[in-house]
Amino acid sequence: MESLETRSSMELPPDVLLQVPNLHRSASMLSSRPPSLGHLRTPEHSDCNGKGSPASLGPTHVSLEDNTEDENAEEEANLSLVSRLFLWLEKKQPDWCRQRDTWSMYLFPPESRFRIVCTRIITHKMFDHIVLLIIFLNCITIAMERPYISGVERFFLNLTNYIFTAIFVAEMFIKIVSLGWCFGEKSYLRSSWNLLDGMLVMISVIDILVSLISNSGTKILGMLRVLRLLRTLRPLRVISRAPGLKLVVETLMSSLKPIGNIVVICCAFFIIFGILGVQLFKGKFFICQGEDIGNVTNKSDCLQANKKWVRHKYNFDNLGQALMSLFVLASKDGWVDIMYYGLDAVGVDQQPVMNYNPWMLLYFISFLLIVAFFVLNMFVGVVVENFHKCRRHQEAEEAKRREEKRLKRMEKKRRSKEKELAGR
Image (tube, rainbow, N blue to C red; front, side):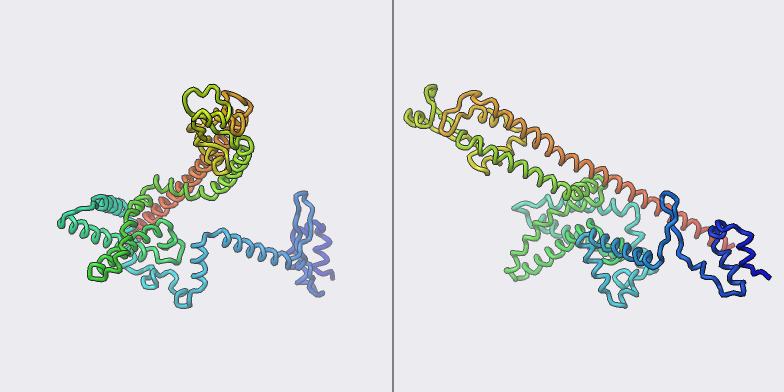
């Protein structure tokens, strides 16, 4: 009696068996002979031409693991210094901290009523508007500072400073309870804007403490009252609550790295043209000043006639002076005068002659075309490109927040309907 494996192999063509490998496996399991190892064959992969090539299983897994490790290493390398610090701290957490990973400050679990209330406060649509109003009022009180203030006004300004600082401390505490301190994707310290707010709040608290200590008799701490100068940075808190200002600041910050490359190129062109200008014009940007200088041809004639042999303010006598002159040329403010000084230059200690060497015009025109028009406009291009990138990123984040709010509203409606049905 023929085995099932033999009959199946006789009735089915080989290509069908290759396309259905499990059929061969089931037939061999029912056969009386030892089970076939055909189902353990290495799977074939097809290339772009449809030709199959065997692939070994072990090396594939190893390569996948290697690729995963490489990707993780690359992601860690792309992180900022602060993100790397947080990542290192997360790895060094003790076990009891890992068990409370979702807890805020390791004290408030996600289901904590106090934490839920704090979350509702910071997500309320009026929260940012109220904080923004308080910041504006605080800026007004800071602007009221003058050298001579009456006692009543000084008391009022100090009192408002204490009140505003207390409000900002309460705001920071509510955000920390809701978002978490430093661990987690959306924790307080993971946001650069929250870092700025927290730094300004801590400066205000330290300023108040130092002022109280110094007023109590410790005069040596009076020098630390320079912290009051940093209170002028409080208006920067408006940036994090104004989407337009936030977009501009993010654009400038993200443009620093590509702008650095352009600065290197610009400095290279400045140095090249500066060295070339020194070779062409060193000692030639002098002129004899005085009346009746038509017969003066050089420095000695000027001095013999009791005239002044004066050097122009912008010249090319050394590399430093050349870079300064080129900077004025690049600004396109007063560049015409410098260009005419170069065209009139005759030689060292020689009185300039009008349009003596018109070919020097090529030096100034080439610098203006390459640096003033091309390289410097690259700065504008980089900023504009990063502005569009940051705006798209901001729009995506805003759409994500709107979607999260919509899902929360839908979840709230669903729960309310479930409660109504359960009450019936």
